[in-house]
Structure formats: structure tokens, C-alpha cells
Length: 214
Image 1 (cartoon, one colour):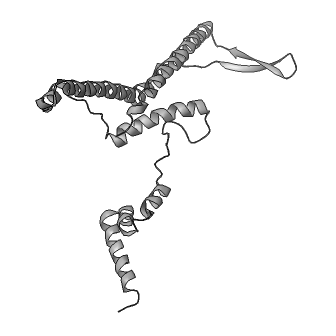
Image 2 (image 1 turned 180 degrees about the horizontal axis):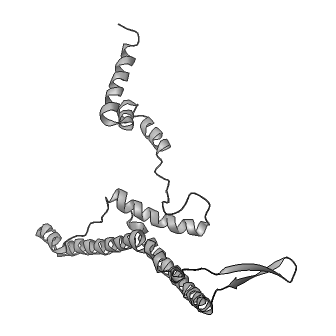
Image 3 (image 1 turned 45 degrees about the vertical axis):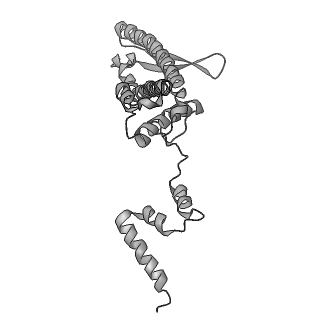
């Protein structure tokens, strides 16, 4: 018998598993089950405790902005990865029919109450998910500054005290000047309204925290 026949056999079996099921599935079945070698290797390469925020660049951002986007990314990951893109809505009448009458009225009403609460929270989470994925990205198209086709020129003027500057805009016409300041005023209100909406949605998604499990 060849001295490495057992090792060769294991290697051949591993390569067969790898070809049919992929590298990590092959590792799962070939590595010792104790002390969970496969899971240690898997979690090293694909950690489950990392939130990859797809709506922010990889460069620096302030922590308040990172927290906001990370919370919604967790909701998105929950809906798309754990729930396959949708959350279950129970048909209360069908559920009532499926519960055995021997269970008693109190049990039946308790189950229906649970299904109704689940429907309400799942509906709320899907609304938050759709807002984040589909509605919020379109806000930029509603910015009043988008109406300005020709931005004004500007120059820096040195002022007192020494080292300070003032910014001076130069417009080609009074009409452009009036339009610019009107759009700037509307833009300030638009930004404030967006910040208010963001805070309201953030508070709503935080309330769904205890339901983010499968």
C-alpha cells in the first residue's frame, strides 16, 4: 500500500466535492467538525458581523452620516438576504380557518393578534425599505437649485480683520440674480425638509429593531 494512499484518497474526495459543490462547501464536509474548523475559516473570509454600507463612498464620512446609512443598510440586508426581497403578510381569515377549534377562543384570538401585529410591522418595514431604495434617491431631482442653468461667477475680496475674505457673486443680469436667490431660499427649505424627513424615518426604522430576525 502506498504510504500516502489515505491522504491521496482524501485529496481526491476533496477535489470531487470542490468540483461539484464549490470550495467552501467542500471544506465544510472535509474539515474536522470539532472544534468547528470550517466555520472559523468561513467567518474569517466572510464575516457575518460586518455591515457593508453601499450608499456611501469608501472615503471618510462623519459618524452621524455613517450611523444613519448603516442602520438602513441593515434593514436592506434583512429584507433582501434573509427574507428574499419580501416580508410575509398573513391572511387573517385563512389563518383563523387553519387554527384547530379545539385550541379554544382565547388561543385563537391570541394567534390572530400576533398575525395582525406581524402584518403591521412587516408592512411598515417594507414601506421603509421602499422609501430608502426607491423614493429617497429621487430627492435630488427635486432640488430647486436644479432650475439654475447658469451659475454666477464669484470672487473673494480681502476684508478686515487681516486674512479674512468675503465672497462676492457676479450675475449677468438682474433676472438671473433674482432667480438665483429665490432658488437658494427654496433650496434651504428643501434641505431642512429633507433633514426632517430623514430623522422621522430613522426613528421609525429604529422601532423595528426587535423584529429583525428570522
